[in-house]
Length: 474
Image (cartoon, rainbow, N blue to C red; front, side, top):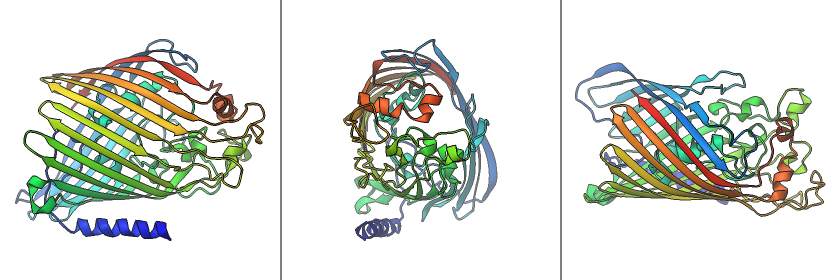
């Protein structure tokens, strides 16, 4: 009952604040948030715009652990290539309407439905907006957890640091958090989203502007288009999920009735500016039968040999993120904190295990721009409490007790050179250290996903990665 009352209170607060309507301002360097286009006074029929980008990257890692095909020869790849189609129009009264589709291509194949297709639309939505009431969006697109925050991660460019090429050439220790996403973050899943116009604090623009956002995502699998899968881990459940402590995405818990609430505050003091943001995500976590794939004789993951992962019930998601950014002249600094609590972990209270937690992550970074050059330096720390599994537990016959934490420390330095209009060259250096519990690595290495693919669990790893590339935008 208390959780329902708490959520009702948050909803009423958002509804109250959404009633106020004044157009806001933006701080320099802020992550792009939805903005309401100003009315022109003349109606305009929808016109089509096409733009996009492609990137080519090369990288090499010198690391302690060179298993699993990583750390060998140089890494050379075509990064994600996106083409955006945008059609927008407006009425004489200032009502704006827009359709946008983003065609993304991942060489090597990455599919929405379990096949080998590598080209698909990830953004595909319609938007309505007006100065007096804000922005309404529906379709495949990101929500407040992406659009309203600006942490240290947003200041680092290069090859996208720990959310980019770095993860393809470095062996992460088992259980370590990869990337900077909150548990329950929906990315571009099908959703309904709404943003208020900028609300002037105290009725004065000099006191700052607050923007509120809310999004509802029915399901976090298959870009939000899947149903509640009570039968088990179908291949479609893998897409869009983050595995967390589960050995594979397709058996990981997913979310239904996902709600994201966000608030962003910006103020410009002329000589310097400030941006603060907070995001809260809640959802109902769901898991099917972990042995469904095996029983149906379909190639996939079977975690039935380990009792810990047989547990079907999962903790519902209650995750939060706080960010702050400040800029002055050519300088900008930002920091962020993510608290995932026990989101999507197995409910182990009646099984004699302790599930651990879904982890925390924080970062801090600085950015300096001079002419066509942009330099940035950042530090990332992630920590996750591993499950506590007794050494004599069923499904854990020979590895000893599992406990402790999985942690990582990563320092990233990036440089971007805007050589010509639409042409950028970039470089990135990442220095890292990761470690986990040795018994946990052995425990997770006994899952079918690891044994079938001959994946060697990583206990600890440290080293450095160097990545260079070029990006062409149009």
